[in-house]
Amino acid sequence: MQKRWRILPFDPDQVEQLETRANVSAVVAQLLLNRGIDSPELISTFLETKLSGLRPPEALPGISQAAEVIYDAVKANKKILIYGDYDADGMTASAIMMRCLTILQADVTYFAPNRLADGYGLNADQIRRHHDQGIQLVISVDCGIANAEEVDIAKGLGMQVVITDHHEFADRLPEADAIVHPRLPGSDYPFGGLCGAAVAFKLAWALCQLDSEATRVKPAHRDFLMMAVGIAAIGTVADVVPLQDENRIIVTHGLRSLKERPPVGLAALMKLTGLSAKREFDAQDIGFNISPRLNASGRLGQAPLGVELLITEDPQRAQDLAEYLDNLNNDRKKIERSINLAAVKQIKEKYDTENDPAFVLAGHGWNAGVIGVVSGRLAEKYGRPVILIALDQMGVRPGIGSARNGGIGNLHEALQHCTEHLLKHGGHAAAAGLSIEESEIDAFRASFCEYIQASVTEEDRIVEVVIDAEASLSQLTPQIIVQMQQLGPFGEANPAPVLCASKVDIVTGTAKRMGGGERHLSVKVSQYGTTLRAVAFGQGDWAEELDQVDGQIDVVFKPVINEFRGQRNVELHLEDWRPVAESA
Figure 1 (tube, helix red, strand yellow):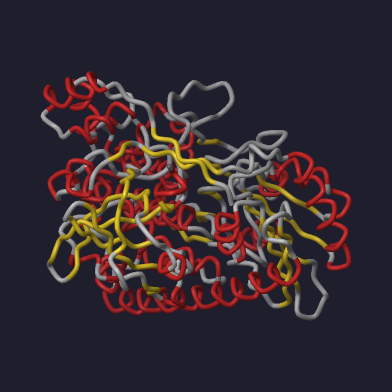
Figure 2 (spheres, rainbow, N blue to C red):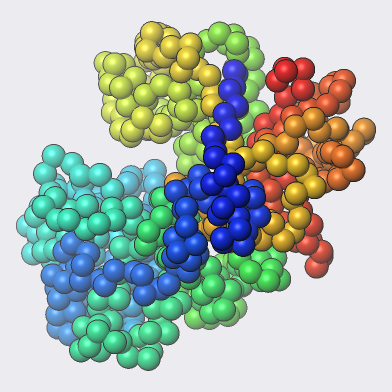
């Protein structure tokens, strides 16, 4: 895989002026300028992220009508169903609405679908089943906007339907009693990047105001909302929506909420994962510790337990669920490693890893719930589109495929080109899903690879590594890293700072594999008398490569402070490296 390093340009005079006026280091001044923050006033606004910066709930399109429909149903003692999704965003959205309606003393229950049996979004059979159980109002969270036909079925059965979602629209909008969506056609809400949990949070806020008969909610409702912003932060980080505008406020305050007032189930999960011992949380703590355990329950068909963890008030049940989800996550990792090994074996046996434009891999018994993670990992590793297809052991059901593009090519267009070989497909340029008969896989593979070969240029195949600034290792003091962390929370559209250092020595004998399956790398690097530990996740193969290097290397990394047994040390999360000779 070819890579091109590009250091963002900067004006030294501008950096020096901001460094002096804002009292920050030169590196941090450069990071701020890269984000368009060029004055002390803008820095103050950017760093404060006040909770009052959230727009009032009634500004969100459709929310006033939805709140009235739901509140009237609660007062009429109607049976209400919260219909969620099987990922962490859907679970957190379901939990927020469940907790809100429980406080309002509603007759409410929830449904978290099985990703294989029920599929994504509203399911007609489940709508009918819940109607038979007496449900009178369905509230969708994190789904439903593309389910016009299913809403027609529910309305035909006499049910009320409120849709809350943030996903893309289908050909027609559902004819629901109310629709809450930040990008609803005909509206002008200024920020369309809210996730499902954030939309649910705004609706819960509106319901609390209705029940309080005032903009300022009752103390009990305020306590709930302050706790719910922590749950919404999990959905926001897990769904990889842009950490800008309201999302940045939700995550900033949500992290504090999770530290200070976590729900019982999350407190048990955080204790189990060691998070409760940390002095403060960041978005990566959600991304690496909390959301994977929630998502594992959804990937392995146990999504209702993820919701239950978020709403239970029973400490023993919370402990049991936390342990079960942790075990599920370990199972998920083992399954992923097994599929990854089998997929890499196929790549080595069937493909020219240097020249083939894409990989289409299939295996009997692969778990369809986790192949997306593996295809993403392989697409990133090899720098080209990868499709993994999980085939039914008995050959009765069609294969389920998950595609990731590794930053190269348009998957939506490619699958459209190959549609004659597929039963169905959906997604966008970077990620997609499909179903296919096993007998069509070879023809599909040939057609897909042919399209990628023809549509992707040599220039497209060069992966660009964008670097914020160059820094020496001696500049990376704990104080400077703390200044950098104030630019967070980091995530989509507000990435963690990426730096580079030149002419770095590898400390002899320190490059080693580590972690489960020896997937990760640990190495010590030194420059002008400063030695730091560097780790690279998913890059265990680099250990052998670094051992073969004769001379110095240049490195690209994200600087972090690693907390371990009460010690706080600067550490590098290695993104890329190359021998100095290659950069000369």
